[in-house]
Image (cartoon, rainbow, N blue to C red; front, side, top):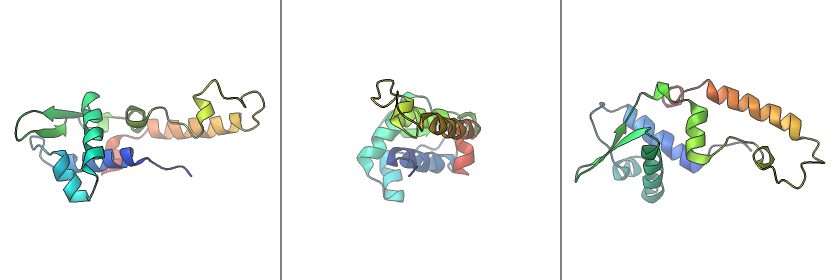
Length: 132
């Protein structure tokens, strides 16, 4: 089954929450975790990862937290997924040249076509499309 990871889900929840706030409003991991019943420790790691890649801006200080650093319509969904989880791929062999079945696999090319279609779809969508 193809599905988004918890890290992607939590990141999208956090981004939608931030998007609904005024640009100057700051939110923190505790607020988001409590509002959406998410594990604070994993959410905090995801927020740090997004801050490291300039998706959100960290605000230091005792009442610090995060806010969006750029409009979500400027961030492609495929780029976002790759920042959080790595390359988009239905199967490992699309990214692992050491796969032991590469020479005998009879589904690699069809799966690669499906994977490329998904990547194209995600590359034509922005985070704003997902968080509306």
